Image 1 (cartoon, rainbow, N blue to C red):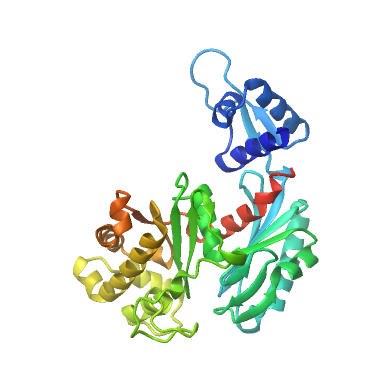
Image 2 (image 1 turned 90 degrees about the vertical axis):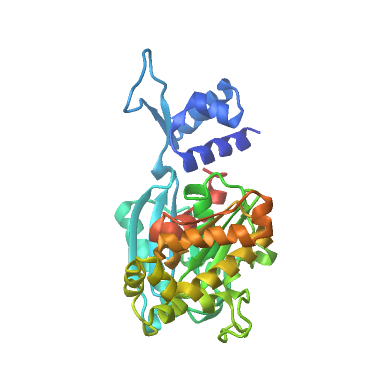
Length: 377
């Protein structure tokens, strides 16, 4: 019981930040003597510290704040994308202590090259900062077996059957957890972003492909062996374009990056920044409809299907979707509410864009690594 309470207290401080002993007792449903014993023990081991708040209000002696100490537990977060890899050392409480990133071109996308560069960059970063790693979390745009980090397929990286978890774990000498990038982003949004406080939410991202992560009853929905979230391969247009998966008219062929390039009349391979700039230049309702009318319809159809299947209270759109005109997102949200039976039954499903920026998957990878760590600190 003491171990359970200790983990619950650490998780509260890690996710929600500093607070007082009294607030911890109230939130965790524990008596003050139990909280005192837990905090005193954690403070003695250097995992937390107590100090006066910077801003004081009211008369009398202010309550001390209990703060997690970032250096007490440091994990590695890795975000592998089609065009870039980012790494960060993240301390207890979610503070990024150091980071690095590099672009991928040609042979640099090969698994061995990516793994070697991640290991070398991590060793340099950890040596510079002087923090030992106790775990790592990795985000990959593909189908990942959660038990061992085996990447079954990451088509946009052209990876097949890559034992990523085994190779990275052996090279870094610490436990490795690997997950699908959209599922990891959903975890970040649930703990620290727009879906914080939501027990049922779906995160959908548009990059080169389209993926999704589902939070159901407060926990990540992970499916058989961890294979879940391939929402981009839901068929929304049976007469549409062929998809690499073998089907035709998959959602990602209608709302992914290439679909946006076609709608904007940009050539395939246009830099991401140019695509975003053209999207942000769409200002009038007439222009938005003329350029993105079909795109908006297919985005709506896919989201209606998602809402009817998973029944979330919130859908968060990430990556390229965050550059869509706000008026288009508002219209899609209204249509999802009107055309989804489940949305009407639950009193409406909100559709909004992520505010976490490009770090969402890096943050999620860190949280993936921290899940088992908080039991051991």
